Length: 397
Image (tube, rainbow, N blue to C red; front, side, top):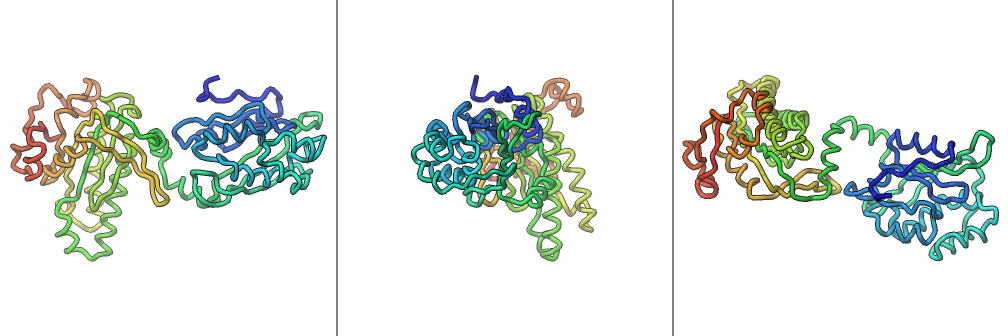
């Protein structure tokens, strides 16, 4: 079976029901039989252990703390992927495994990896039907105790069929809920798609608040902060709703990327990028009104470009997670945006000509009738644009 496939449900009906419920609920979880042989693991658990880049492989059919288990765990990007972390996990739930061994400590000692055998004598059989446990933070995820619940599963005749183990991130459910409710799950999914950085064709959008220095001097600090927050929120909302990836926020500027692979095609990515700009232009007027300002007080300039071979990835730290892209076209997009003074939205010829007829019609554009101007020939061209990208053909959209 290919490692990236979902594991089939256990043959035992009771264990299959438990596995199905865990998987449908999107939990981190796995199932062992009455001898603690691993039968199944959820896709969400395997994806987390694979660092959101791949689906980690579990050693199906072997004892959970056997030498085979420990050896396979070394390949995981995250999770209990070291002998030390497996020792902590064994201490946390080994009492249940011991209670299920007819041969007691001697049998369990023979089944587990030699690096864990000294722990067996420390264990006390856990006879109960359920056990709440915690173990040291999983490798690659950070510090903190990982909480979990282990509960025994019995068949219709009351016979022990196995045990289900469900764990969760160390954050409490209230915190997880707050983070989830404030995030767009589609965007989170798209961020996961770029956890592994690589070459990806994409439409690029840069936007920046014009004359921000004068506006910041005119407004109180608190009012200017509120304005900036409203603009960033509006920009992110428009990008996310259009299916894009929110990039870095630098000062009063925002960046975004619309990937061909998540949009469905290069044309769809270009169409989404243009649609996001149009939506954001309307939103900026609403932001100005909420901030007791006139539309002419809050003007944004936009630069749109196509990156045929951008290197796109997700940069995640303890403080934030953001999409980033590198490539000459990113720098060129920045030059285009800087030339869009007066609230213009300038799009490159490379972007516009990615549009297929249906997507162009949806935008009320006719690429065959558009005329372009070299960036260096614009009256608004900056010195950097004339120096670095004078020949890029652009049009106003």
